[in-house]
Image 1 (cartoon, each protein chain N blue to C red):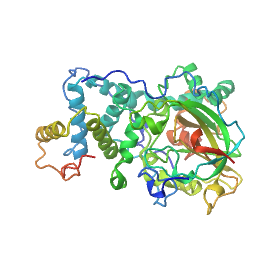
Image 2: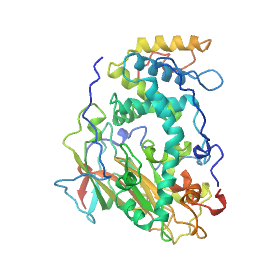
Image 3: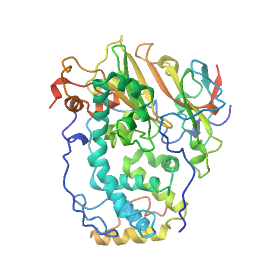
Image 4: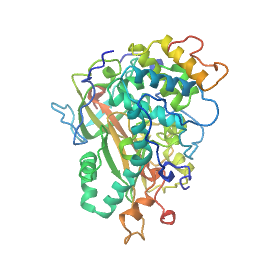
Length: 224
Length: 114
Length: 119
């Protein structure tokens, strides 16, 4: 299954009006009446702003970071690992150090990269909450945070992968990683045949978020 | 309102890994997860308690999340390991190949030699 | 060993039977992106720790399974801010009423908060 056009990666960058005053409530919002939780969240933010605990600017910058920068990092790093075997080796040895070398600040995330091979397929989950290398990949998809994924992928990974359209033969070992403490994970998928001459940019385009969590594998026909 | 800078939580680091001075287990050791069910915030999933696996890697020593969750500083740090388990040993009715694996991070105080 | 299996937290769901995964990413509404950013900023500003946020979500108990992800995280943050004395229930309720009026929401919607439960 391809990532839906609604996918995070597919969101185009859009312009921002940077004329907000620091204490003005953010005016953009969803259509329809706000839910109780939206109201609660806005109330907390306003109170925290007034008490000097956060600023509107900080929140806005973080939203922009999650929207415009973070979702694109992971595919660039893994595309580079595909293109450069020595970088891949360093990424596997120490994910955070390798990303720093590549110019990406993972903030507090401690990254472990795990590699798919013809013998082993990796898939990531956080059963206890939704731990995810956000500084590398942005926000996790809704399915990753869902209780159905969290509870089932640990005991029936192959059935769950099938729901994503990924069928693995029995001779491939499935290796599930429950991201339950201080480490965060990214999958280095196998590089498809036929991509040998591709630029890193073209490689990055087929390294969707789903492939970097391990529920799907990169597809050459999905390339731009 | 006084905010102050908190000193709890793991420090920023250039490496994924942290030092683990005095670590009890080494890579390859067989370990069992304690069959214990304490109340409160734990990062050892219920489904892995009492199961036996092998140390896959030493991640380093980190402040104890079980304490951080309640506003304590989490010191002294606890060594965190990645432990590898065979899926059939975790789930008695596991339907996939016996070679399939599940791996996660377990703190040293949750582990015993097996 | 010690303890009882009933101490399993609401979030500790690995291994539970459940239905099919909705494999489509449903994205985030604007308020959810903002709530996510707020959650990130309060951690970066060291107002709360991620461990505390997780614990507060686990303490939702039976409510946990009934809520969506950002509903849980919003309630967890609320519980922590009140617990730490950073906001009071009263001022939060007052601000929520003001925001409802600002967005012209006619009635206070049903919620566990309306019933006076603090966590």
